[in-house]
Image 1 (spheres, one colour):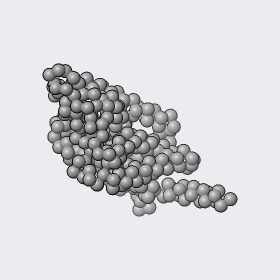
Image 2 (tube, rainbow, N blue to C red; image 1 turned 90 degrees about the vertical axis):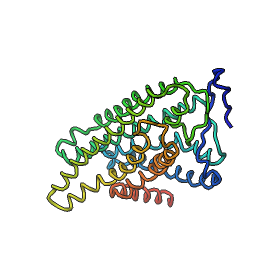
Image 3 (cartoon, rainbow, N blue to C red; image 1 turned 120 degrees about the horizontal axis):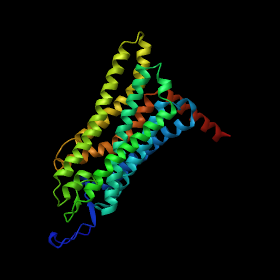
Image 4 (cartoon, rainbow, N blue to C red; image 1 turned 180 degrees about the vertical axis):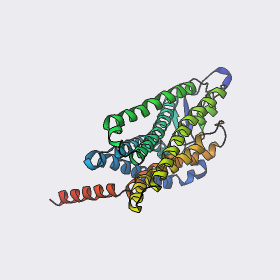
Length: 319
């Protein structure tokens, strides 16, 4: 158990928090530990494979796969910020985490999540340029532009999230110290504060609204234009080829946006904390696991590279 603070009146602040996890199903802890461990290892492996084959095979060294591999790298970091702690909770029950470590985890989780949304937006714009502006695409989406866009995503997310985390860390925490979540969720931390949190709640809401809805609007505009362009293509084969390059991305977008809009885009973070846990579990476990599966199963070029790589590995072992 965590060290509970003294009474509020003597001014003792919380030194550590307790992550509650999923108390209703904690009796299945060992089974859940095994299931989530396998899901975590599969997610890391799947996303790592995408990064590896993109770097190793020259045929995949294009803007689309550059952004995809970057997104997969951030997905590995994103789930690694949360899932290991969740595994410990399932294995040992309630788990304590220090004040500093809690805010570091909150920052890493929100920062990587925000960066992921900006990368999704860039990936949508990349698909728009490739399908709607094919003649200009090679000159505009060169290697320098790709690096600049990824850097811009990282910097913008850092600037937005750092100020919010600093504001939350400056709130007073005198108790209780039990976070009703499986990681240091920012909304849960705000809820535990003894300070007036109205401004911080509104700030968190505005930032979440800006990140998610701005990304969503740009993505919808990009894909609306893509759909119109695909429909106007003269042959069915061209339409099918154009659609196949976007369908995987669109499926992943649907999974990510649906869970995140439910969790973050509401002005009062104290509402529906329990339901947030289930939605966050989908966002941090299920979606990162499905991403590499969707991208690889629905992409013939990735299929070919994977088959050739496996054949080379098999031949090298036989030698």
